[in-house]
Length: 374
Ligand SMILES: Nc1ncnc2c1ncn2[C@@H]1O[C@H](COP(=O)(O)OP(=O)(O)OP(=O)(O)O)[C@@H](O)[C@H]1O
Ligand SMILES: [Mg+2]
Image (cartoon, rainbow, N blue to C red):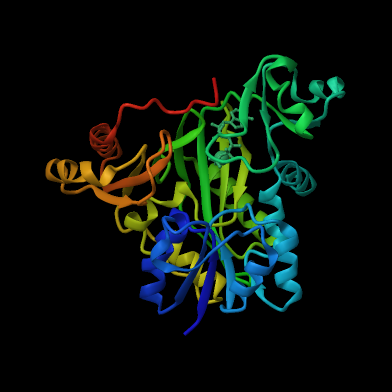
């Protein structure tokens, strides 16, 4: 039996568990805490920044992959030097580690993206490269769910970030909507993608995904697929790759950022596609033929549930909406934290969106969402 080791015990690792069971893969998770979302498959609870602990874990599996991109690259280099298969390879993962490295690589590949610059405490002239204020500032390392992303109107707005090190500035894209292209690549180079999806963000955090993205032109389909396939091939990505994109008002596609693991924008595929992104990721990292990405239903809508304890509200939701599928992450309560998601599939996107909105309202708690983008 092939064993796959996942670093990180979040909901992405958790949702790999049923896929691994079906594929006959022995899934082992290196979790951060006893109560991690993926605790059912945790074989180690430890600190992923500790190289010794990580190596001991990696030596018990055939291939190492990820639930998040925060593992120090030096630790991954150590695993590779010890002969351990790490997918995606550290050189590819490095692009998702640091947003300035990603921007530079996309520029080298000539892939369309927002104008950008890297600034320090004394680099005012760089501001011209993004068209001045207002613009978007991002902490290059460690951001997620919009944390580490701000719309800034003056240097004062990033006064607290500048002493920490370089800050990435991007032009504030007046996008028409946000899209995501998800696909997967095997070590042999085989690449398979799903239809492009549309993502809705609230306060910088993904809240709703519509699959496939409505009203997409053939040119956009071609552009999005070829951008993702090219990034996967040029960067030697193995596993699932999600490319977050903006569609501007001229219909052009610009790359926002990359994720080299199953991604929030792909959750809808578990119900809507023949092959889920979790199954595909495991197939890819174990170098098995990739599954069909044909739709099982013409359309699907996913909504994230924020806050906590959604399991208690689930009974009421399921009584009213038996067609809604629920995925609980079983995480401790924290305001604004992703606690689960719901999916409905069918024929009519407008009807599905309305149903998901109603179901989601039944889960909503008292706490306001964190809104990093003003
Ligand atoms: N240059 C930009 N122009 C306009 N809006 C932007 C820009 N960059 C980011 N945003 C908005 O902020 C959101 C979060 O940004 P980004 O994806 O870089 O951050 P993140 O915290 O890494 O996100 P994730 O939740 O995907 O990990 C984007 O989905 C988009 O809505
Ligand atoms: Mg993002």
